Length: 585
Ligand code: GBH
Image (tube, rainbow, N blue to C red; front, top):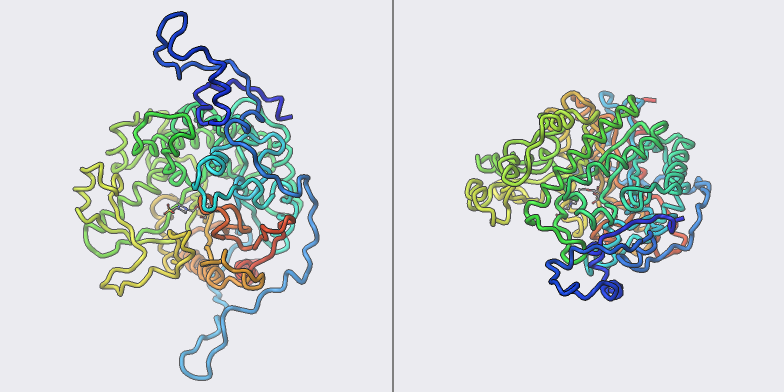
């Protein structure tokens, strides 16, 4: 059916299709003269060629691999032998000397009955089936296939976990562990292969069945509309998130999703972690249509489009599904001043302002950027209109935060003020330095146990989580419930392990989940209204530019076996166990 989708694509948009470009050029009239007159800007001419989805793949991405399983398979029964928990990580006390007391149940801690704890994945990272059933390419297909060394080992997610065909098994396996919620994302370019225009009914039917399977297993489906896999045509046509043209296209896509699934899906996230994907701009030169916005400004054009797109989709969603919970999904670690100097305090505030506050201040506090961001962006972004500010302000029913870790912040060596006045300072415009070690006067230790060197941003900092959750509640939530919409850990060097049993025994990730959940219980017992949490990830998957070289899964997947078998790791049992003990029945 993919061949039935038609689209006119500007010739400039296929400029990166090196292998086929010559064929195009041969059919364009001589480049410098036409009827004897000089052509001022030959690249501005568009072809009248009609390209279908298959042509887009051929021209812009090239061949992709396919899995050995290419039809939807039904779930196998999880054998009870797979559900035996590992021996506990905590050893019994020595007869003398330092002792580890048994941890008694703390009667002042509990998760309410309707607390939704679950696991998360994202479309491009887990689905595979790159070209199946009419999916159009996304920017990530170009990053993986065309941009050399963009990803470690040049891994692609063409097959990945093959969740597109194995979702029934995946849902059955998380259900067998008692998981209450599954956070999945839709692939925009499956639903709309060109990002706008025709809707692919095979994709609609696919996610319909994913959602129905969740419900069948009594799992709450939580759906994110956008997790970074931007339809390629939108990037090549107008620069994707760099252009406000994306706002109408995103809202049209959201409308299709709300209409298709809103009768069964009550939890929605519009956009995942705009701080991250907006800071991906500028995209690698030479692979996409070129845009003239200065590099340093591109993330903020993207952010402006995100705020408009999110807020309009939110308003539409509330009209279509008055009872739905819809939110933006923010991210970032807890920010701690390295020392008690004034400069470090200023740096911490600037770090909040240019990261979380970039999106959360407009959405939760004022409808507009905070003063530090505004001082920078007002030199090149148009101001929001009053109407836009009203649409943005309050456009979330929940404060959702991907809260993995924490860092120290400190003032740049030249001082904050000198940095703010010097756009060529490497820390501009945020002008905050970051560190993962305590200051020398505090001993110079790492902030917590290190994860994998390929996730160098991540340490186990669960001791800071209660303070972090209080900060989110006091700063932005404004009485709304809070969800930890992602958290998780990369066991160091896990990709180097070869023995299955060693892979499945993941002690640092296990202690991360144990201590994280205990910290969340502490914060909740102190009054922070956390209503749900979603562990990243249900299984090992394509970790963006790290490919399969770093692992966040609570299940191992043997990617060398064409059947892609899944196995529970010890950490999954630790995570599940806390709810067996502390969730009200
Ligand atoms: C989540 O982001 C993503 O939503 C998810 O897709 C991903 O698989 C998961 O994390 C695990 O990484 O390397 O210094 O440039 C978490 C927040 C923010 C973490 C950006 C990585 C890159 C920092 N991410 N960060 S750096």
